[in-house]
Image (cartoon, rainbow, N blue to C red; front, side, top):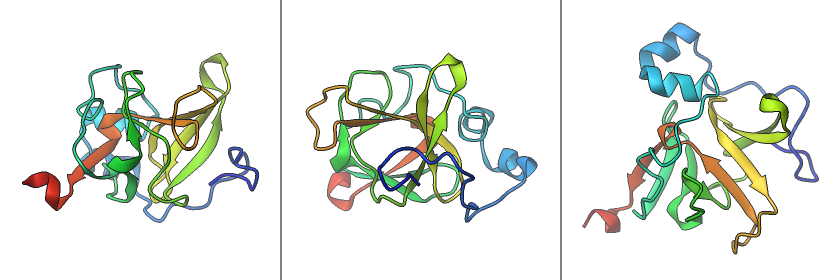
Length: 151
């Protein structure tokens, strides 16, 4: 969720549709998935399975299965993580101000379960329709290839 002017929401977040205890999330996710999705960690650059993937399909949240991004919005940013210029739907993600690491960034969360996905950056000059780069951890995603990609 972002404000009407597109800036990240700074007030309290709406309640997630899926709420699990930390113990329930740990039972559902691997330790590496939990560290990124529930503790806002970051996988090492250029190690994620979807960084250079060109498979046609839909990317869902690895924690809850909600549709987040489509391959039609994925582009090669050469930053070390999968990059998208837009989410599948404007309501698929929530944007939140992130002042960690001594800098102002915009965190991207799954709107369905509030899992950490990555960050979004604007104005970097990429030749995309939005000039935005949703820099998303591969481990936060699951790719579902389209039927025509499977053949």
